[in-house]
Image 1: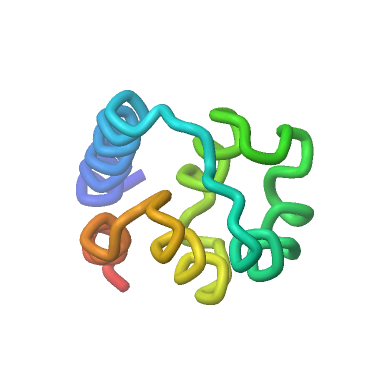
Image 2: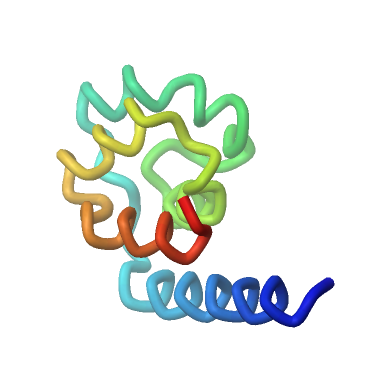
Length: 94
């Protein structure tokens, strides 16, 4: 692993840790989240209960893999912010 990749990984894990501690809330399951995140849920996090804190953490850990529809629904539901999403994209170079 290169030095820059290691730094990025450490930064990402640190931010996830702080975000997880600060936002250790369950996912708000609105009809849009239910509809637009169905594929993402089954693809990445179906071992966790709907609306659970573990599901919220799983979605955050898999954030870069989530579909745009799901991310937009989570933002609209107040489960994450556009600023957080933009920050994660910037960290990942997207």
